[in-house]
Amino acid sequence: MKERKARPVENLDVYGVYQLAPLIREAVLADAEGYREGRSETRLESQRILQKVWGETASLPSYLHPSTISRCLKWAGYEALEDELDLKPAPRTFEAEMGMKIGSAAHFSLLRILRKFGVQEQTVLQDESGISGRLDFMLKNPVTKEYQILDLKFTGDWAFRQVRRDGLPDYLRKTKGIYNPRPEDRLQLLIYMWGRRQEGLNVAMGNIVYINRDSGKMKESIVPWDERAEHEMTIFLDKLAEAHETIKRGELPKPTVVSTYICASMCPYRLHCDYGQKFAVGAIKKEKKKRPAGVYRQARAEAQKKRKMMERLGIVQAELPLTDPQGHPGNP
Ligand code: SF4
Figure 1: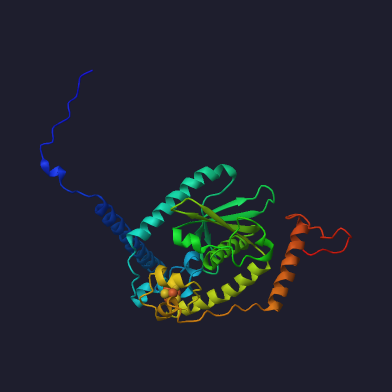
Figure 2 (figure 1 turned 90 degrees about the vertical axis):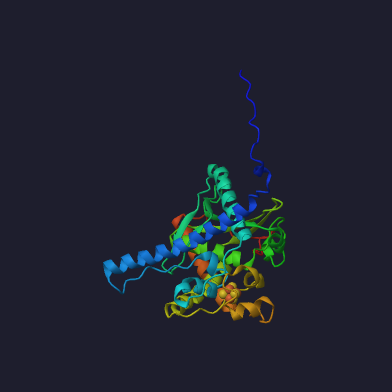
């Protein structure tokens, strides 16, 4: 075989400090900005076509996204009214953009592995109430035959540490390895479950799996569709309907954020939002959760009724009454 000789380096400029990290940073940020502008232009163009065909009053359906509405309805209002109010969101940082890319890549890589176990890929949710988004994964549980939604959250170390066991409901307190989800993650999952249930699928449970991007460690939260879930969704849907009306009038909805770090470091409209700036530094007290017993009782009775109906239809198996060894009714 003919011996190949390496070409001598003639241009000594190649030994200059030509770093590639700045190139990656600029390229990623420009791509993110281009995507954002492209999306806004596409929307304006679609609106223009719609009005050309159906007249001036025709307007595109406006949807709110579960990932935003679960964090704060005012944030969703800023997104929807961005052009009208001329309030631009803060540009995304390179670190946030890369975090998202790493998360998306890991999602698809996991999907490839989980697909053989019946896990379906991301499905789009679009609902009459004006919610639109993609949920991560769904599977029909091979034991219960009921649907289960999986939401994967890739987090940094700090956010991972914020997911704790404190506040777990009684029936999960003794189960090892189960954590209490962050309130906004729980609500996002409830929205997905509710949306799929509206389509007639019996989604009985949702799981949030937090994966630490730095260490690869996992924490899991379980959210059953029960009377508490129904009650929380009823309250949220009322707030959402009110927010929709407010947005239609060209005004911003009331803030619904519950975690200070969302205002402090996540919301891209925080520089425009007086409430968020005060809330982030603890200058606004959180509203105490009201748990009206009557509403819970009613939701429980309705859930029981639905369950009985599903048992009659053969959708779920009948539950046997729990009894203690002496035959007395037990504590469910
Ligand atoms: S800064 Fe906070 S309160 Fe204001 S819109 Fe953003 S998330 Fe909502």
